[in-house]
Image (cartoon, rainbow over all chains, first blue to last red; front, side):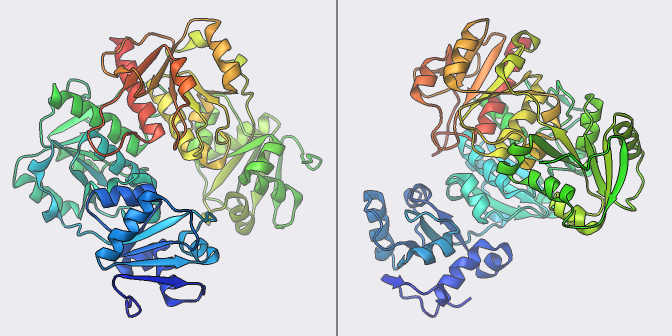
Amino acid sequence: MSNTDHRPGARRSITGLSNPTVKSLRALRDTRLRKREGRFMAEGLRLLTDARESGLLPQVLVMAEGRDPHPLLAALEADVIAAGGEVLEVGEAVLAKITGKDNPQAVAGVFDEFDTSLARIDRDAAPIWLVAQALRDPGNLGTMLRTGDAVGAGGLILIDDCADPFSVEAVRASMGAIFTQTVARARWEEFLPWLRCGPGQLVAASLRDAVPYRGAPYRAPCFLMVGNESRGLPEEYELACDLRVTMPMRGRADSLNAAVAGAVLAYEVLAALEG
Amino acid sequence: MSNTDHRPGARRSITGLSNPTVKSLRALRDTRLRKREGRFMAEGLRLLTDARESGLLPQVLVMAEGRDPHPLLAALEADVIAAGGEVLEVGEAVLAKITGKDNPQAVAGVFDEFDTSLARIDRDAAPIWLVAQALRDPGNLGTMLRTGDAVGAGGLILIDDCADPFSVEAVRASMGAIFTQTVARARWEEFLPWLRCGPGQLVAASLRDAVPYRGAPYRAPCFLMVGNESRGLPEEYELACDLRVTMPMRGRADSLNAAVAGAVLAYEVLAALEG
C-alpha cells in the first residue's frame, strides 16, 4: 500500500470519498486488506488516549471537521503532529465511510501493526500469560486482552489459526489492552519447544484427568490456555499441559464461553499466586 | 403475522422465496419484527436437541430437502409432528434466506417467546440469580445465560432496557441455556420492591465502599448484578445493594467485560456457598 500522499507532521483536509487515502483507511476494516496494509485502526478518544499514555501515537489521526474541542483530543493532535504524524480533518460522509459509524464525534487513529513474534514475550515480566488456541471470534480475543490487562498478565499468545488481533472488533473489545498487552502468534509446534526452553507452567481447563481449579498448584509464570469456541483444545495439547483443571458445571452445558473460562481461571490463578 | 397456512402435525415443502411463511420466518432475524411475532428462532441440531431434552419442541422445524439423515434430527422431527407442529422442508436458497447461512446442513426451530414476567422467578429454586442492567450486547446477554447454566443459577433478570434475549445472537451465545435458564424482564422500580418482599442478597461489583470479592459474605439466594457495558451501574442501584465487592484490577483498565465480570463473581459465589 502506498504512502505517497503522506506528509509527515501535516494537518490535511479531505472531502472526497474517492480520495486514495480514504480508500486505504477504509480498507483497514476488511481483514484481508488490513493485513496487506500492515496497519490497524483504533477508534474513540478513550482508546487513543490509552495508547498515548502507553507511549504509542497513531501515524494518522482522523476526525471530523468542526469537531467539538476536547482537551485530550487537542493534546493528542499536538503529539501526533510533533511526532511527524498526520492529522486528517474530514467531512462527515468521509468519516462515516472510514469509521463505519454515523457519529460526527468519532475519532480514529491508524497504527503500525505490532511485531507478534514469540521472541517478544519476556516470560519473567509477568506471573500470568494467556494462551488461546484457534480462537475464532475477534470479540472473544479482545475480551481476553482486556481480562489479561485486568489480572496483570503480560500478554496473549495466539496458537494456530486465530482471529485477527488487529481487527477493528478485537481492538474495540480489548478496550485499550491491545496497547498494553503483548500479543504473540505461533504454531503449536513452535510454541511448545519455546515454552520448554525456560520456566513456565502450562495450564488448561479440561475434563481429562483434571483437578479442581480452586486450590490447584499454580505457579508463575503460569500460561493459561483456552481452546477453540466449538471444539475446545485438541487432546494432544491438553496432554502436553503441566496441569489440567476442571471448573464446576452445574447445568446442562459442559463448557463456558472461551473468554469467560479464561477469565475465571485467570482470576483464580491471580488469587493463588498472590496468596 | 398470520398462521393461516399453518397445518398442525404436517410435513410441508416450500421452494418459493416469496412464500409468506418464508417471509415470516425471515422476519425473526430482525429484532423489531421478531418482537411483533412473539416467536424466536434457535439454530442448530445441538441447540434444538437441548431444547427437546428440556421438554421444549419448536412449533416449526425448518431444514433442507435431502438433508443427510441424523438420528437426533429424526427423533426431533417425529416429536414435532406428534406434538402437532410443522416440519418444513425447503430448498437451499430458502434455507439460506431463513437462517442467514450458506450451510445446507443448517436446521432451525421456531418457538413461542417465553413469559418474562418477574412472577416466573422462584427465588428459592436456586442459590444464584444473575441480574443485568441495561446490557446492550446480545452476545453478552447470551453468554450470561450460558454462565448461569454452568454455575447452577436459576436464571437471568434483565433490568431496564436490555438487548433482546430472544434475538438470534443471544440465543446462539446462550448455547442452549435460553431453554434452561429462566429469563425475566423488569424496570428497576419494579425489581427492587419485588426483591425486598422475600429473601435475597443483592450484590454488585463496584468501586464504591466495596469489600474484596474473595471471601465476601455471600448468602443464598444471591442476586449478582452487572451494569451496562459503557456506563456500569447507576450509583443509586449500587447503593441499594446489600454487598458491594471489588475485583483486583492490576492493569490500566478499571473494568472488565460485563459478562466476564458476572462470571468471575458467579464462580466465586458458587465456591463460597458450597463451602
